Image 1 (tube, helix red, strand yellow):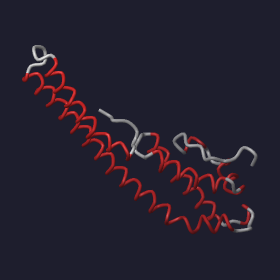
Image 2: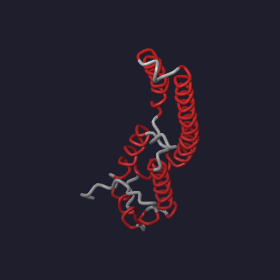
Image 3: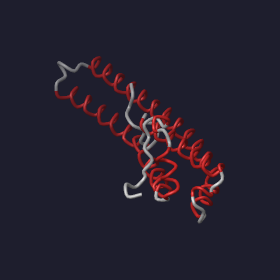
Amino acid sequence: MFVGPMQLSSRRWFTPVVAASALAIGGLRLLIPTVVTTEVALAVLGLVGGLGYFVYQQHLSQTELFAHLFEKFNTRYDAMNERLAELRASRKSLEEWAESGRQGVIDYFNLCAEEWLFFQAGYIDQRVWDAWYNGMKHYARDERFAAIWNKEPKDSYYGFMFPVPVDL
């Protein structure tokens, strides 16, 4: 059972939902004791508690995977950040960039595509993806980054589209 897209804030709802379910079952037991016997109430409470535990454990597992991916992606970005900033700040034309500059931008595109792939699979929190995507827009406004992206075969990026402005 998949809970849904990764949302770190989902955890806060587990306890209230399980508690409300238990109260509702207890209330039904009091209101219609002939239908909701003690045995039925306990069985349903056990089911609700077990389901709540399962969903919480799945969320915990997704959170651990998210934390691993977040650290891995940020470490990779940190390793290329300085070089990307230098390239963007440089006044050189795309033709003047060394091949290492072009390759650095392609490596960045690969990182962005991998982040997008895990976001699409539901393992990256929406707020984190939005922050990463805003960073991508920063680089996409540079004509040289856009030119490299426009020459890249798009089937290499898992369906990811770098946010190149239309007017570039």
